[in-house]
Length: 245
Image (tube, rainbow, N blue to C red; front, side, top):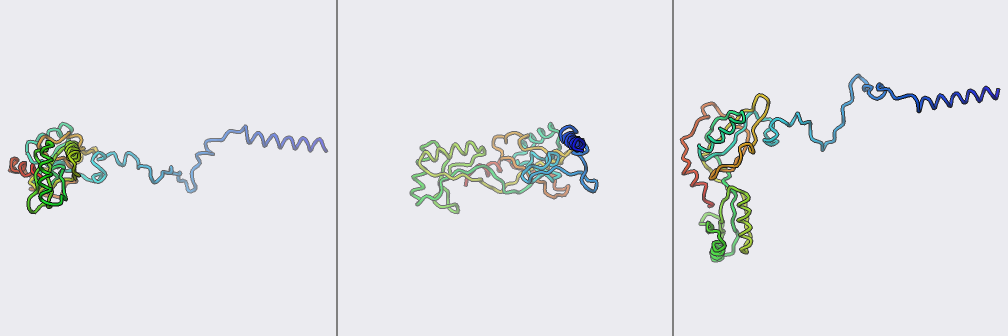
């Protein structure tokens, strides 16, 4: 009996070892579907981005334009600049329509020295800045912030930063902000392509000399009659955009 008991015990030990270390795990054991026949979906953390297929269309245009079927690129104060941008868009496979609008647009980056104590201080600051090579500086007139010296409006942010650095070296605290003006401008309305793509501002390159900084926004709801080419006066618009006051 003792021999039989030892044989049975040895058989159980061998079977347990065989099932634990010898038998391989089958694919069915790993990939079995969840109850109800539905496969488990992979878990994604809240901070992870969505699938690329969701954001690829219009991604270069910014998150606010993902659902837009049409985007407007501009503004342009000179029809020739709009024509050049339209030609570039055609090379990229896009078709655009010109639209006239009266908009408050950013004409550049305004560098100034504000909050001087008295008009005499503003006059002294003006002379100091002009001596530092900032010949376009002037004291703002009535209706503008008191005792403020305008140094200039610059379309290039790097140039604005250089001027602000010169102002600081001259001993003053400059401020830089967007300069807005209401102008008659042109926009190019561009429809989304059949494959869902939209152009990016970068694809247009840098704005031409004397042009306004590019912006991109969803097209407004307009009737076909609104899509007309304006009898624009580029010289007058450029003159209005050139001053800092």
